[in-house]
Length: 42
Image 1 (cartoon, rainbow, N blue to C red):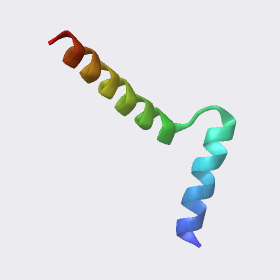
Image 2 (cartoon, one colour; image 1 turned 90 degrees about the vertical axis):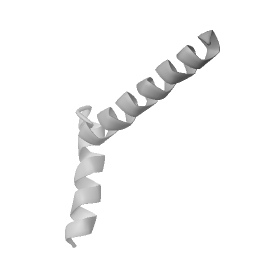
Image 3 (cartoon, helix red, strand yellow; image 1 turned 120 degrees about the vertical axis):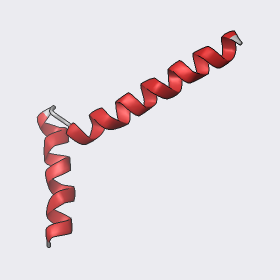
């Protein structure tokens, strides 16, 4: 039950518009994009 709760709470946050979990994903994506930009310059 606890595991399910964590997943559902994350989904609820996502719907609320305050996705903690997605923010991390976004920062990771941004870092990757920056890396790609640097690679293309080199």
